[in-house]
Length: 101
Image 1 (tube, rainbow, N blue to C red):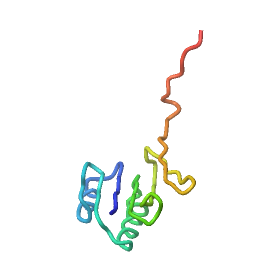
Image 2 (image 1 turned 45 degrees about the horizontal axis):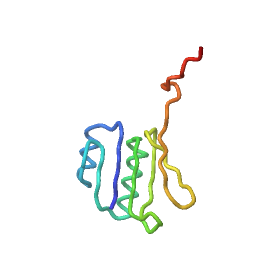
Image 3 (image 1 turned 90 degrees about the vertical axis):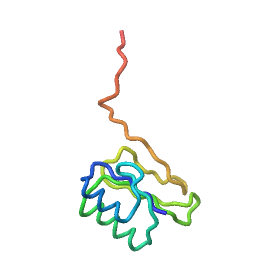
């Protein structure tokens, strides 16, 4: 099982992805791909399209999956003590600072 989340990609690129995988929502794809196809697809997403992407795929680990991330996504992946965690990126300039009297 492979899940790919693409952000800020062209409709033609989403169309190309839909040939290999099922598009659940705009930019969210799921399917069953072999390792060779998955690797080639990741290379295309990162090297050719230069897309913001997240790929999660089945693997024999504690959690049962592995993850790859590329580009400026809204979440950061962290591998901590054998498990994958996600961290939300916060834009410090958009945070409202309380006024002090």
